Length: 179
Image 1: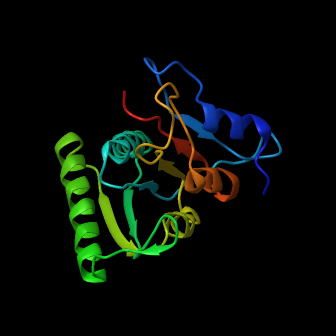
Image 2: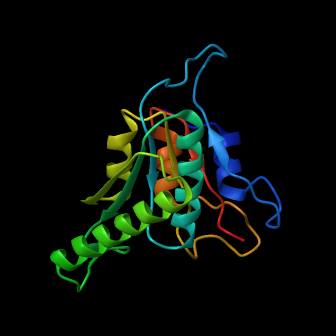
Image 3: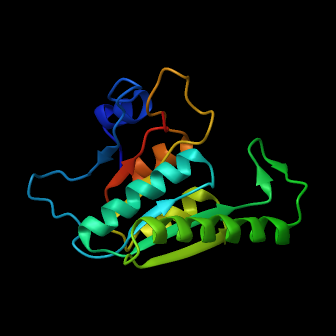
């Protein structure tokens, strides 16, 4: 699938001033009658930082509105950006991933007590983990990595976000960095 210039530009540069950012939804379909997924969970990728919490809150609200379950995904790998091995043991990274997803579960339970939440801390790249779950999802929600965009840009897509927008079989919501 090739993403059009408009959706790529919107996700790269943002659509609103930083003082009033809003999520951007990218929905693929050649025809106006293209059916959106009517079943399946809302999937959200989180990193444990402020952007991940913003994505989590947006995804939880969306899941609640759709009457869907929420699947919270935190992917970890022992390879850091730049293709260098991380110094932490895989068991440490796995435990940190479980802590991040359990904190997310608690956050959602406080905000929306009746929402069903599944968590997954997986050894994988964020892109592969989210694309795998996108196969059964109504929508995938993501936020950019901390520090990725310039300070005057509301939404700045990194490689994971750009690839999800291009290849996910369901709509993708890109949440701007928290202000």
